[in-house]
Amino acid sequence: MSELWTAEAMVAAMEGRPFGQLPKSVSGVSIDTRTLNPGEAFFAIKGETFDGHDFATAAVAAGAALLVVSEGRLPGLGRLTCPMIVVGDVLIALERLAEASRRRSKAKIIAVTGSAGKTTTKEALRRALSGSGTVHAAERSFNNHWGVPLTLARMPADTDFGVFEIGMNHAGEIRPLVKLVRPHVAIVTLVAAAHLGHFHSLDDIARAKAEIFEGLEPDGHALINRDDARWRILRKAAKDAGVKHIHGFGEHARATYRLVQAVLKPDHSSITARIGGSEIVARIGAPGRHMVQNALAVLGAAHLVGADVAKAAGALGAFQAEKGRGARHVLAHPDGPVTLIDESYNANPASMKAAIALLAGTQTGQDGRRIAVLGDMLELGAHSAGEHAGLAEAILEAGIDRVYLAGEAMAALRDALAQHVAVDYRPTREELQPVLVAGVGGGDAVMVKSSLRLGFAGLVDALLEKYPPQQTSTAADEG
Figure (cartoon, rainbow, N blue to C red):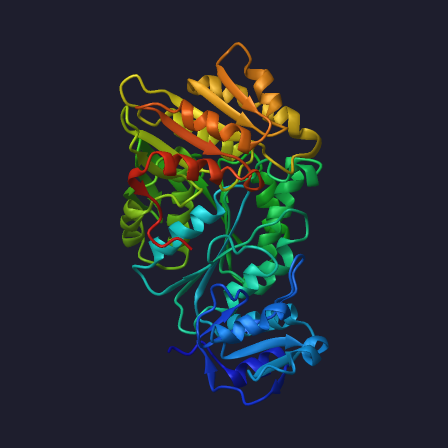
């Protein structure tokens, strides 16, 4: 069992009080008894809908080496024999352990934010940097007020490269998290109308994303999408934060990390890029122009942290989209194979248009159709109707043959597409499901996308169950 933390170091970092005979060390840090491994420390965090103290018994049964609990809940845990570290607030204790982890680390740290592409870029960095050293990166989308400190606390002391995803719904949320992470490189992938209901404008979203520059290490690097319409706002914010090294990535002629050429294929892309004064040729295993942009950020970051750029470029050839973020399945339909693109994890106007373009470039079988299955984009506030209706232009330009829609807000897109393309609308995902499953035919290419709360992953599951996949493409090390 590898040692992540000594109990002594944990007590000191968290300013905790030992209770019982603590073990010498723990092998990991967990906040979820369902995934807790024997020998790990269980932090009983109190969330909005749960309290980890209620799962203390389950943590002990799962083999927790010790529990981190709050002083106020200790009396109710008296029957447990598991050793504990008692603290005033468990989340604050986790943050203190995260700070200690960052202090002890000699790793080069990269932080990623943006309205779209955060997780994909993080996963591509995980793969691209692995040829140059050990990489620690967040699991799944652990990018919020507990996910970021948890990821930091889990970082082994001998890590060479750390990659952290930082998300936000409101202004002010990135600032405290990036000050925990203290990156050497801060990436902003894209500014788009995600969470627009919480902001007055896209400019305000850009300013909120730019909080990531405030936590950069001295002499750190800002890496910004040079093709983004909010480039100037982001660059100014970086300068105002005292960042001396500001770089752009993209197709723009003045981009530091510049796309020279891109050949977009249905299942991959081939690019030539100018990275650090040299031209790099790379194959990107996941298709789509948006993946090319993410790859430029990855190669730029690899260069800035001193990784082997050639190895990073080579690793991108094996990179494939994750479940819910572009993973592809070839379904065994009785009338011929169906290509299913799973984009069900989340959606905003920019990522919707990228997914529609991806569908447009996907090959169909003989007589096959390109089918878009779309659900509501949430948190757009007063802009919701206009942003949903605005997808019509992208759908028509892409030559999509049929559209299935569900969700209250998608009624605006239904109306905008009327008499232009075949549309089947249902108010809910549950009502749409049987219609979609029955409507798919041999040779079709089907793309499913919506905001997470719409539950469109259920449509993907229904199609996979009805027509078992012949072939699946997902990230090899989803995390």
